[in-house]
Length: 218
Image (cartoon, rainbow, N blue to C red; front, side, top):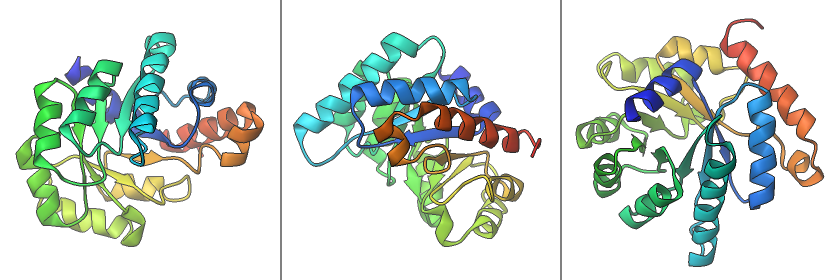
């Protein structure tokens, strides 16, 4: 299963990122993304309270129950081994973190999920890889741009990098050409107002456009 998820990320190259939305909104968003060709969604943990962390767990479980046969769901902003276990219990297939925490990476690996910690410097990227990360999220990628990815992958060409932060349709091809194997995106696929107003057709259209760019059709 884990190898299949890794291959799906390599093949499809895009993980959508949602934070701060209700269960129903996340479900409708997932359906709209899927209709547009985006099939992986990260639901981020809200760190501000236990109640909100439990809400994220319930949301991931509901997404898996209703759409798990069509899409792959994971948890984001995972900062403790306990949160890794919460995500696992909810059916998450990948774990994404804002930082490089060896304990989080090792628990993710132990439970058989795909590990995607966040890192920025070459030292952090190498540490994440040595600890067992399957991919490393370079965040925030926008601070240094595609040229940084190219510079880092020259000596660390054995590490699979995902660009996150400021990636959209105007630059995703540049990041891929520089050596990133994919990206995490949000704003280029959906706006907060679209979610608030239930404008799911706009999400689907934006997703179709983005995936067409990934395929080199635009």
